[in-house]
Image 1: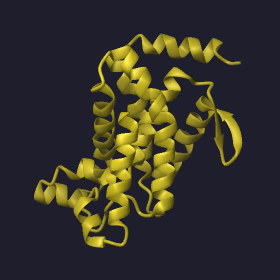
Image 2: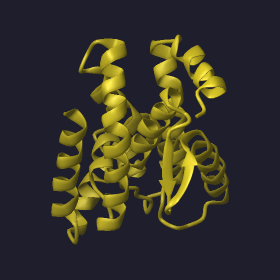
Image 3: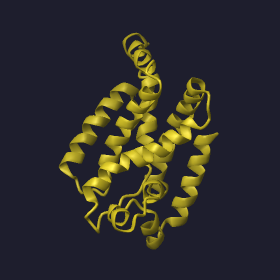
Length: 202
């Protein structure tokens, strides 16, 4: 299972990087170094390091629950095991591009974590099952409502620049990528989503 492989690799890299500031610097999404040193690999490697177990655990649990589902859906639709890992890789890159453009001249700015790609996976899953029941801090809600609240909250915090060390821009752009990318490759998903949204509630 590709999702499990991504989780295992991310956990190995992250855990072995805890308390190793130099290794985190070497792998982090560091816009200034991308611009000045052409270290484009950082668009990807930044998604495999995390700040601590809580940061890592939240992302990997979300990826496990939503990723396993969307991996199977993509396999059925596109008849290829390559689409899902390519989707995840592109989500890492695309969700970080706005951050790069915003902070490319800021030497002190760095970002780590898979949140952008995980957001893409979560919102891609919403396309196929918007009324799936999920639990947010033990509160049950449909996935589509969670998605709306997530986008509104993330957009607000991104614009406010909360200074909390979390790359809210990556969350936002990852979510939008997760909604748009599947529709580009298979436009029929759009009508299916609308049908599920209007008639799929149980």
